[in-house]
Image 1 (tube, rainbow, N blue to C red):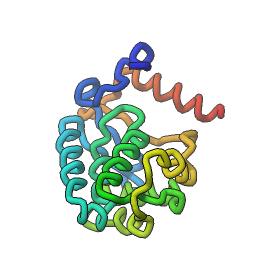
Image 2: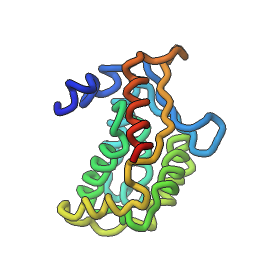
Image 3: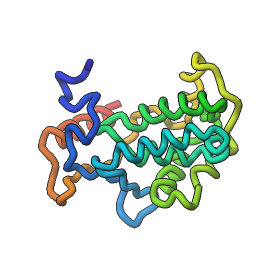
Image 4: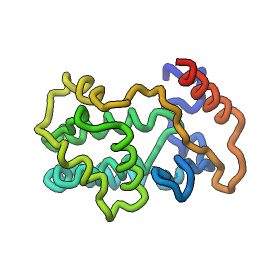
Length: 188
């Protein structure tokens, strides 16, 4: 609600504001390349993740599976990583565990996450996160827990690509917003 006058898509999922956009990260064929769910598949991916999170023993044993499905959904134009991390932390809490993010690095985590989205059968994000599973921490300790991810300052340049499903360029308002956001990050 705070940002709707600036960004008309704030707080709305992609199915509502940009059902025609396909979002990818990185260059196809290179490490870290990620294709996120098309808008019509967001709900399916998110519901699958929530369903998996309700199976507490499996979730604790395979913590990357839920995060991978949530990340695949990529429901917003901006703020997915932060939003999904908070939702994931809550789901972990409900299942009785937390991830000790202070023992992870953003680059290694994102590489494992991209690999998970590309081929969940390999369980690479499970392998990355499982050594960092600890007993649930109090919600009041979440800022320190999440802030413990090395490199999570939000100032690095994202290489997300926004393209219409038909291959054409997206609306100018989205490209302008992205260019402005990257410019601000580079000035910091």
